[in-house]
Amino acid sequence: MAKSSNHFIAFLMIFYYWICGILLFFVPKSLRFKSVKDKLVLITGGGSGLGRALAIRFAKRGANVIVWDINKSGLDETVELVRAANPEVKVGSYVCDITDRHLVYETAAKVKRDVSAIDILVNNAGVVSGKNLMDIPDEKIIQTFQVNAISHFWTVKAVLPDMMAANSGHIVSIASVAGSTGGCQLTDYCASKFAAVGFEESLRYELINANKLGVKSTVVLPYFINTGMFAGFKSPILPALEPDYVADQIMAGVLTDAEYVAVPRICYTLNTLKTILPVKAFYKVYEVLGGYHVMEDFVGREGTQHNNNYVNNNNNRKVK
Image 1: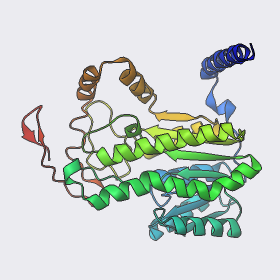
Image 2: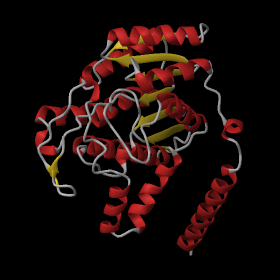
Image 3: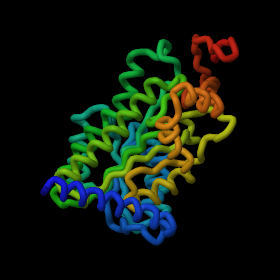
């Protein structure tokens, strides 16, 4: 009898959250924003691109900002831009290779000594190879996983104990739309982003199970961003997104404690299509979206055309 009662209550809660989700859709997000004033935000990969854009936006809302990167000159530039955006907030930078777990723990402890415990962690750093599987050096595959996924374990373990003790905080994982569907010349990138999505979702369940509901988590699945990392990317339907637009959407998601943020919103449909369509039908959707060709002219930050030797069976020519 007790089991039936629990199941009935669970059903009512599911219905309640479903109705709330529909109603909140009609409420402007700006009316639901939480305050991050005086919170300490740590952003990895903060020396350029999206990480820099997020640092500036957090500072404008009164948050203190710490940025990590392996690029010191990029960090220095970010710090100056954050100070210009809001001279009233604290801002600092630390050179840190997030693939080195010992260095991550040491640097996080130094931040805590120098400033305070971290309130918001943004796992933003990422890399991409942009080659077909057999053309990716083994070392690059390892590096992709270390930066895009495994580093999340080290950064979160470094800051989560303080968040759980206070039952307050926010973990933000910048994944990718490539974390929900595969892509040509992106085997290592997609696999690592799938891992980042799975990590964040599993962590959320652990926090709920531990009754640490004050510690929030957000996973972000943006389409490809025009930051230089995906230079050469092309799409006949949906062009690469501008960092400022993506940063605005991420901020809106974080400030409303959204669990998932897909940018643009049409990306929410990908998982639905994969679920309801036959596998071969989704292949056609992928083809219509230009998926087989978007990375053909990829050069990335290296600025050189990648040589891929696979033959594209759709047009019987080599993929450059």
